[in-house]
Image (cartoon, rainbow, N blue to C red; front, side, top):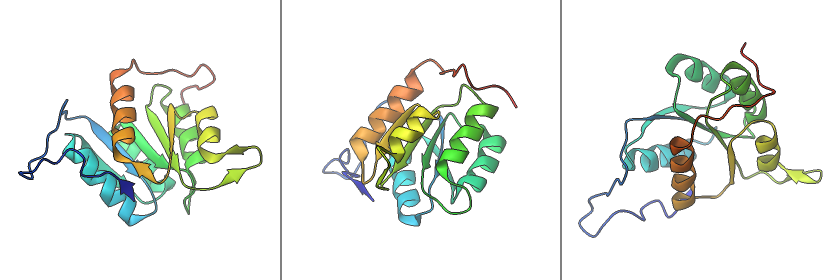
Length: 154
C-alpha cells in the first residue's frame, strides 16, 4: 500500500495536479491494491496509467503502448521484475524504469539495488511513499532518455 496517498488533496477535496501531463506510466505489480493505489496516485498527477499483473503481461503492454515510464515490482509470479527489466532494456535502451520491492535481502544486496544494477533507472522500497514516488517519476520524466551502453536493440 502507498503511504501519504492523499497528501495533495485539499480541504475542498479537489486535487492539485502540479505539472499535469498526458504521459503514460505502465504499472506492473501482482498485488491488486498496489496497482489500484498507484493508478489513483498517478492519475491524480495527470498521468495516463496502464496496468499489468506480472512481467509477461507487462512486457506485452510495454510493446503495445510504448509507455513513457514503467513502474515494476521485482518479486512476481509468471515472470519476475528482473527478467522484465532486462528484456525492456534490451528492446528499448532508452526506456525509463523504476523498480519497486518489499522483498528482503538477497546475499549482500537487496532486490531494489540489484534491479538498479541490471537496468532500472531508479528503485524504491515498499511500502511506497507517495511523495517520494512522484518525485522519482517526475525526475525521470524530466531527464533526458537514458541509454545503457551494454543494452542493444532486439
